[in-house]
Amino acid sequence: MEQQAIQRAWFLIVLAVVTVAFLWLTLDFIEPVFWAAVLAVIFNPLQRQLEVLMRGKKTRAALISLLIIVLVVFVPLILLGLAVSQEAVNLYNRIQSGSLDVQAYLTRVSPMLEDLSLRIGIEPGSIQQRIFQAAGLAAQTIATRAVVVGQNLLSVVAKTGLMLYLLFFFLRDGDRLVGVLGDAIPMGVTRQRTLFSQFASVTRATLKGSLLIGLVQGALGGLLFLALDLRAPVFWGVIMAMLSLIPLVGPAVVWGPAAIFLMLTGSITKGIILAAGGALVVGTADNILRPIVVGRETRMPDYMVLLSTLGGISVFGPAGFVAGPVLAALFLSVWDMFAQEHRAVVLAPSEPPAPPEQL
Image 1 (cartoon, rainbow, N blue to C red):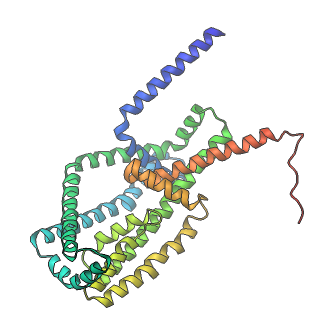
Image 2 (image 1 turned 90 degrees about the vertical axis):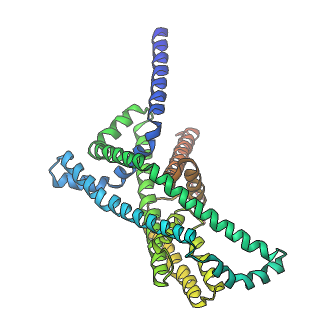
C-alpha cells in the first residue's frame, strides 16, 4: 500500500514536470491555440449542422466550416486592416510633409484657448507647445507601430496559419477532445459540464455581444465621419470599434473631442451634427443591441465585466477582451458551485431549510 502511494506520488511529480515543460515549450503559441479554441466554440453550431448535411463526414464538414470562417472573418479583417494602415500612413505623411497645417488650426483656436488658459491660470504660449508635442508624439507612435507591424508580418502570418490548422482539428475532433479533457480532470461530471457550458456561453456572449456591438458602433462612427467629410473615417471608425470593447470608455472618446475641436475651429454646424449623431446614433446602439445579444447569455455584473476586460487586456493584450471575461465567468462559476456544495453539506437531510415567511 505504501509502495503504491510512493509510485503514485512520483507519477504525479513526473506528470507535473512534463506538463510545465510542455507549456513552457509552447508558450509563444498560446495565443493561436486560444483563438483557435474560441473560434471553434463560436462556430461549433455551424460545424454540427454541416455534419448533419454531410451525413456524419466530420472532415469534410470541418473543411467547409474553415473555409466559411476564412471568408466571413479573416478576409474582411485583412481588407479592413489594409484600409486602416493606408489611412494611418497617409495621416502620418501629411503631418510630416506639412500638408496638414496644424498651425492654421491652432491659430483659429488660439483666442479661445488664450481666454480659457488665463481663467484657469495656465500660460497661453505653453498650450500651443504642448499640442505640437502631442501631435509629434502621436505621429511618431503611428510610424513606430507601422514599422513593428511590418517587421512582425512573417510572425503574424505564421501564427495565423497555425491557428487555422489547429482550428480545423478543434472543429473536427472537438467533442472527442472535450471528452478526453473531462476524463483527465477528476472533479465530477456535473462540475465539468457546468464549467464547459459556462466557458462556451460566455465566449459566445463576449464575441457576439461586445465584438458585434463594437463593429456596429465603429461602422456608424466611421459613416458619420465620412458623411461630414472628415479625414480618415475608416481609421477613426476602427479606433471607435476598439474603444467600444472597453466598458465605461466607448467611442465617445473619439467623436466627443472631434466635435469640440470642430466647434472651436469654426465648423459649428459639423460639430453639433457630430455630437448629436455620436450621442443619439452611435451611443444608443450599445443600449439597444447589448440587451438583445448579450443579456440572455451572461449574467456577470457590469463591474466584473469592466475589471475582467481591463485586466485581461493588460495581461493578455488584444486577446484579453475575450480571455478576461471568460476567466471571470469561470471564477464565478467555481465559487458558486463551492457555495452550493457547502450549503448542501451544512444543511443535513434531517435539517431541511426553513420555508420562507408568508407575507
